[in-house]
Length: 282
Image (cartoon, rainbow, N blue to C red; front, side):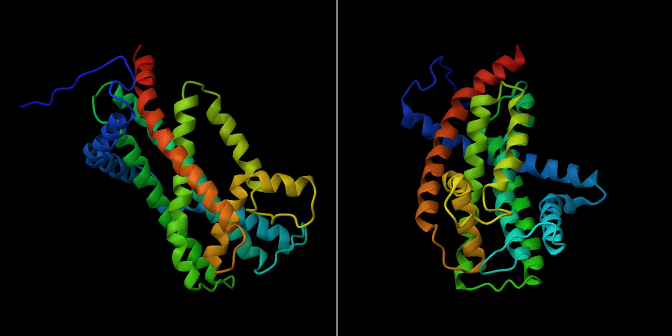
């Protein structure tokens, strides 16, 4: 017997719980399709690229090596306590790339799949499965390369480093949540993706990725402190390098908020996608 599907003009005809249940069901139904989309794009991407997997981590380490060169050449002078500037920058770039790749990949996979949804009827959550596998693949490669490079920069893992995969998953959720929210709210505004592209480099410089948080009180210290990415980057770096962290509480608070935003993003994605697809098809 074929499955009967009832379409309603109401976003949540049977309440919030029924909507969440429907999202979970469609995640299960769309898993195989999402994985196939990931495998298709992965094969196409590296079949058409001479350097292949190199592009999964190259942008992050080009940025890191640039700042390491500037610091070693005394063009700029940055003092870092507890580790070398090279290790500080390399690990900070890893944390930042996990967040930004999660954000950009989520928006990219959904945007690229919307044209399919105008022609075929399949669970929309398949696009999110596609994004998750893509993010995980790129992040694992990035992490592996970072471990190798950091080993030559004086990195010595401790038992605390064993918890880093959980922290890495948390950073992925933060980026995923932002990607869902940005897509649901701003997907019909073409300029927004350009705004995000311009804003991210600026935010990176006030997130303790390249430069440590200022010690003295002032406007710069205030900007670093109110930036939630600062606490995420600092705590993740401390866990990766095995150092005692003072940002654990803030990390926990921000992570809890990010998880709530992720759930809100899923609901908004479910509600707004039919509207977006209808406008694309009209």
